[in-house]
Amino acid sequence: MDGIIQPIIVEGNKIDPNIIRRDFPILNRQINGHRLVYLDNAATTQKPSSVINAMDEYYRFHNANVHRGLHTLAEEATTAYESTRAKIAEFIGGVKPSEIIYTRGTTESINLVAQSWGRANVGPHDRIVITQMEHHANLVPWLMLAKRAHAELEYIPINAEGYLNLDNIDTIINGNTKIVAVTQMSNVLGTINPVDRIIDRAHKVGAVVLVDGAQAVPHLPVNVKSLDADFYVFSAHKMLGPTGLGVLYGKERLLEEMEPIEFGGEMISRVQFDSAEWNILPYKFEAGTPHIAGAYGFGPALDYLTKLGMEAIRNHEIELTSYALEKLHELKYVKIFGPLDENQRGGVISFKVKDIHPHDLATVLDSYGIAVRAGHHCAQPLTNLLGEISTTRASLYIYNNKDDVDELVKGLIEARRYFGRV
Ligand code: C6P
Image (cartoon, rainbow, N blue to C red; front, side, top):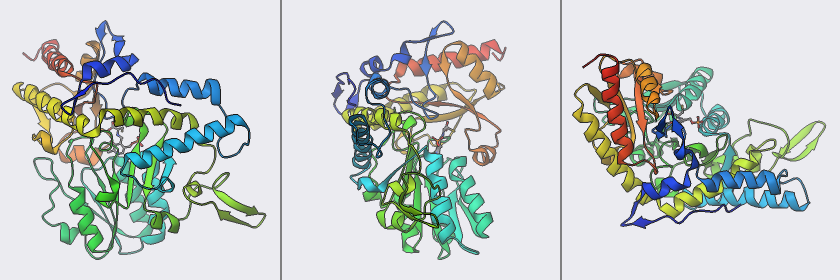
């Protein structure tokens, strides 16, 4: 289960992307005759060899179902599966492993809370509060719940700089509010939100808070206990781990009260022809055969991040984001969305290049081996609020260096030439 992790040099609480890069085989690829410059990390990150090897090892040597068999392979698989759960619990602040529910990803985690906790606790005239910068995964489930429950859905607005405007927070999060769902870091603007302040206000009126940590937990030190988040959700694939595996952290008291939304094997303790009783936490919410290979892969991903240190990762991203903002700013035809202060944002940079459609731009950049995302980034209401239909987005991670940013800038200059905009 413990894949081979190359030694990583951490100096002065900073990481060295040039050493880290050696652990990521995909970064050796040539794309259209150029070295791959991977700047689409907000969509999904690349995987180190230790993660790839662990998943390979599972299928080669340990493949079995979990919690069901008494044979050696089943015991090995179960031990590894549960040991990753314990690592996740430790990684986000030392919560109980039984408070960690495996899901398919952030999207499923939010849907689980909206459908289970939401349907039981939100009724007519109650209020659900989210923000204008939510990903569809943290918007549509609440929209559907509000419609179904005849509840109000209220949005915390954003200001022109791309920060949440919390001036009216006490009126927005009022006594009718049952749940507040907020992203810790925007996948479009990069804004890091003061979730502690929002949680504080929500708790004053007796509301619970779900924090969407999909873009935060891979990039910042996160402690859900000190945040006092009631629910915290994220995806393994955005933090070096495999796709198809996500996490729902919930406070034990809340998870105990909640009903499962999926029924079948493993989530029960006793079934008769006319009744069923639920298993203990966390299994109550994990019906069916889970993503065992995913858990094998996610363990070394967490080890890798832990070894680097989340503070050191954050320091690297502040430095690289600052460099990227400065370089992009020098191009007068580039408009950047989101905060310009690298200390209040992550390395997700959405921008427009004057007179070039974001999709055309992304295609030209790809011809130089540069991978970026173009579109509404699954945040259509926010993109429309910015006055756009789509933007181009470059997003950074641990293996990106200043050369990658320079390549992006060169690519933008080339794209302007290609479209005859000089
Ligand atoms: N954002 C992006 O390119 P899933 O797809 O379930 O792993 O994560 C959903 C999700 C939820 N919240 C935020 C803040 C996110 O950024 C994402 C995923 C990717 O921006 C894919 S759309």
